[in-house]
Length: 266
Image: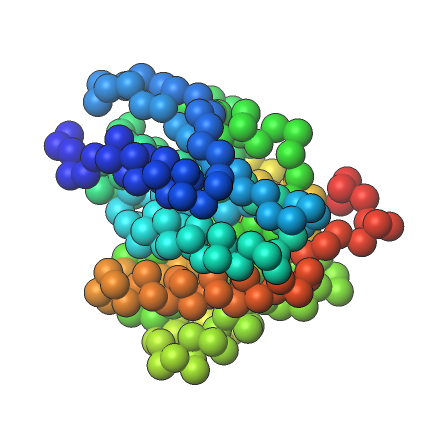
């Protein structure tokens, strides 16, 4: 196993960005493996009264580098818009430290960490993430991913009844900017329409991706963005940020405020 990138260097960049934007930078836990000892971190930004509870994650797969780069810029944009935002935002900059260093989808053990949630004998990285999330509930979650095999962007969205689709607005914004969209009727084995995966049927409660873990813990709405890995790195980051700007406008409009009559136990 040969390292292609430096995880400490990446965390150094996030630590500095946290200082610049007024976010906290905290340690979730640590693990050891043949590659060394790794500390995993999260950050928190509180804007206004913190009414809307948001979680943003990236770095689940080490061969998807546009995600962490997007989050670094996204934090700056959140701070720039702080005066019109009301949110408590938890940010996970890299859920797969060894995959990041090795430039592999999987971790050092060859395990796809996005299939390890709510699972017996789960990978240590996901145990640390779940421990950090314990007792916390969110109104909206955003998972920033890439698909290394595609030339067009697509999104995965689930929303509770009565919630307007934010994914449709993101796709529309991408089209206005001339960005390619993955138009297949089936994406990753799931039905899709207009660049949006349309999930159907019940969701398993084991071996879950992080997004679906949040769904089972009462999130009102979630989106996973998948930028096309076949395009240039800068273009992929640009496409992710187009989607993020749509999210910021929805946040500013208070679209993720949970109705008082709606309990967390969904």
